[in-house]
Length: 254
Image (cartoon, rainbow, N blue to C red; front, top):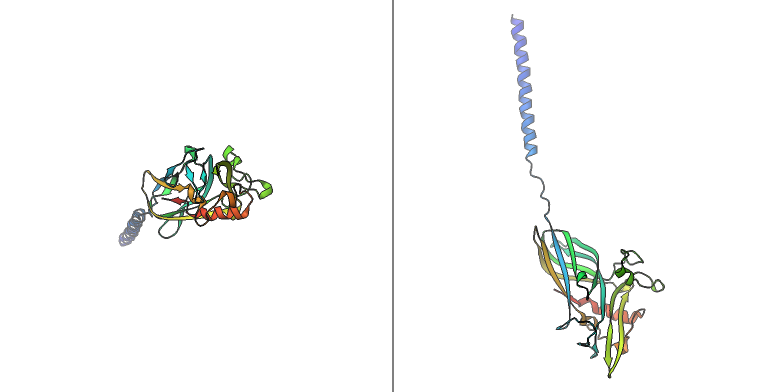
């Protein structure tokens, strides 16, 4: 009889220990399950739209409305270019990519906006990009084979890659009209741009951001570009292309 009681006590103690450990284990599991996960950044979107003027005059095609810094009246009948490596800058100077590359035609409104749905919501201190095709992409057929990209190819005999800018039209001098074509290409003419501006990307809806180009800035500051003396067809003229490249650093504003 005594042996039976002792065995029962031992069994009861064993069951009690199992129950205690089970309660501890369950409590531990519940604690782990309620751990707060790291917050995931809210994704939002951005629509970056570019518009144009020539000083205080709107952009119209084939009209001698504009005067260059050199005093020459001119018209514009083509204005096409690329922006690449378009990024937003965070306050800690880290960067968020908006788009790898974008083709613009100033006379085609369908090309005016860069849209990205995957930009994290938050505050930014500026935007950066390159005018032209980044050197990592600046070789024949690196971009999708479209009519626009094909028409922007830079001749293989001159290094290949793409035109960064096609700025064309006519100018008048002493009553006569002459053609001009400001064409930029080759890696030496890539123009890096950084514009500081406080930008807030809201959560849940695309944020619109408008950027402006003053086309007359391509023909002044730091170089007053004269079609007569600096060249009216500059493709392959490294001196003339360098002057236009230098002038391109301040063509954009917000």
